[in-house]
Image (spheres, rainbow, N blue to C red):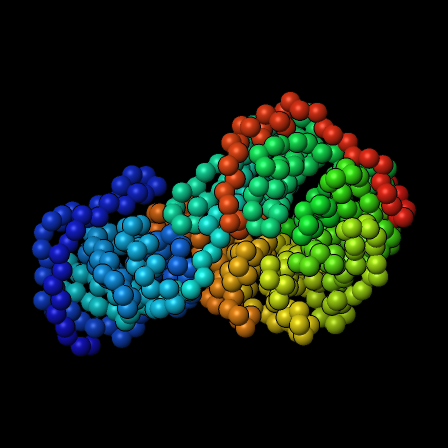
Amino acid sequence: MTKGRRWLLVLPVLAAASLGLLSYAMRGQTVTIEEFASMHRSPRIRPDYADTVIPPNIAPLNFCVEEPGTRYYVKISSARGEAIEVASAEPQIVIPLREWKRLLGENRGRQLRFDVYVGGPDGSWRRFETITNTIAHEDIDAYLVYRLMNVLYNYYTKMKMCQRNLESHDESLILDNMSFGGGCMNCHTFFDNRTEKMIIQVRSGPGGYGSGMILIQDGVVSKVDTRTRFNAGLAAFASWHPSGRALAFSTNKTRQFFHSARTEVREGIDLRSDLALYVLDSHAVTSTAGISDPDRLETWPAWSPDGQHLYFCSAPVLWSEAEETPPQRYGQVKYDLMRIGYDVKTRSWRELETVLSASQTGLSITLPRFSPDGRFLLFCMSDHSVFPCHQPDSDLYLMDLSTGEYSRLACNSDDQSDSWHSWSSNSRWIVFSSKRGDGLFMKAYFSYIDEGGTAHKAFVLPQKDPSYYDSFIRVYHLPELSATPIRLKGEEIARVIRSSPWTRVDMPITSATPRPGS
């Protein structure tokens, strides 16, 4: 160990915590670090905000220093501007927002350094090796929308749709399921990474308000029931056509069951699923045999950014309608990645193609999501199943659409599920839900995707209280990035759910064979 000397002025530091305020007791006093021992390793911090790339507009990465001590001092610096100095009698390091924004804004593309000092009860100090991150040039979309819910088993209970301002630690409630009888909010989908046009699928609770698609366009909320004699099931997973004129959606007969074959005891399965298209201006539903084959399971729709193709996942039906749940061959279900051409002007379907088959990969392909610039396709792969969130081996893969080559991203965890991903509007950032750490509670993680398609180390959604995740026992589900906030009040949406009539669509324009209801 080497010796050094440092002088510092301890400034008042206040930090909001889950049960009160953290404050440094030695306010206004000048503390002298006459000597310090240089530790030849990085400090242990939680969350792990080290050796990664961060957005220049992200909220402060507050953290806990996991090194024994009685006093803590952290200096945060970069090439330009005044450094930030935080001192605390507790291991929680809370970074002032204004100074943080200034430092990151002045240093886009440069390194951000964290120098951590830990003091002991005998007055000694230890200085650890510098933690270094990189500040990206590109911002991340300023808003993240997600469901907060309990860990699901055989039914859901309280559920909230929330919005987080990623440039601060501010979280706002969008919709509480108790405001419409305890129903389910199933999948929010934005048009073009903006909230002016969006949908929320709802399933009514005991209040009997009905179920269907909540359509929001420029502040106007309406209720659409997309069920017809062709697609008797409710709309579920959806994708906006880039024109904004149509919406592809799946109808799924989903069941959940349990086993004891591994640490994750839950399985989700689609016993039957199809795809259809809701055309907004004609208020009609259309489909075709290529996306609603009775011998196949079709789900997870995703439009290519040019609007020429609808991508989706498809697997053969390996059981009969009479077979009990779970079907004996559920572990053999592996989904292919398919696409079908579509012309939104003529409303005509084209040729069905296989993009990537399960026989090629040996894995089940699910959840395709395009980067807005059209260069990459991000998807999950796991041993089997249509629901990667229940598969510990689920990983994120990235396909270069110019070559068709794909690879596993370095931001994946080693042994827990990574899934439910979405892109920022500039195609440089992804957010996804991960069970890393405990294998149970999904948290929102971010990763920078550079121009070459390389994913950088993931970091968790920052919180004002650095120890927030130690006691948080809900999950972040369906994280979606948006460049604009949802401005509607939750009660405005809930009032429409409770009181407005459901609008039925016209009879389907379809060449597909009608399927029985689910």
